Image 1 (cartoon, rainbow, N blue to C red):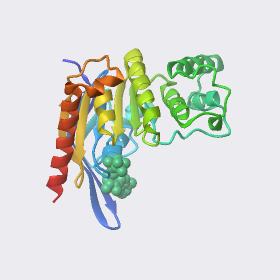
Image 2 (tube, rainbow, N blue to C red):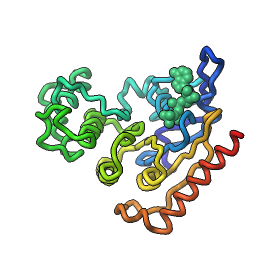
Image 3 (cartoon, rainbow, N blue to C red):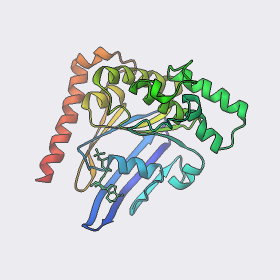
Length: 260
Ligand SMILES: Nc1ncnc2c1ncn2[C@@H]1O[C@H](COP(=O)(O)OP(=O)(O)OP(=O)(O)O)[C@@H](O)[C@H]1O
């Protein structure tokens, strides 16, 4: 039995707002083991981002317990357990791509030579070797998002938290990045937590899919993917793939019915 990298036990999070309490997470229990690729899918407001932010110690649960690498999220954050990729690439326009990737390494006090080595390595990992000297505006949206993944990989954290990283990109680019992300995941063996609104994206990428539903934000279903690790894009036309997609859709529908 593998020890969990992330263990949420009856997690609750209530935001106190001017309009009253918002139950962003309710009774969320989940274990993620090393090397898992877990997607979180569900309608707006079901707590996907909030869960990721709890793992990253950017929010603090109001009930239940959460450990990351066996530690409190705050301690895991200090130990740099994770890299975080946001929906917008969030690159500084006045810094080159290499400069952007280097920034967290500078802040962490890595030696100059080590910074350069790591920047080169992660640029290669995301297929952007040779683009380090470019500025963000010289790259396409998809390339910028890859640069932002490279930045999250630069300090070699075991866990990659990704909050709808490809949500703003068109479908063709997204397909391509999905393929590349799977390759990257297979090569680096990171544990990935990935938020998406897209059923095909969740099914294509994941070893496990967590279907969530809102008000209060909770887990409606957890689906173990029966798909093989090797996944060419046309796997999306196979009966196995469509069956998983169907179950995700059912989970989403059940969550909505609960609301009424
Ligand atoms: N800082 C905050 N203060 C008050 N309410 C918040 C805060 N952050 C999130 N919420 C509320 O908590 C609930 C869950 O939000 P969250 O952003 O986690 O949902 P989500 O599933 O990621 O949604 P989306 O798909 O739109 O990104 C929502 O009702 C949201 O309005």
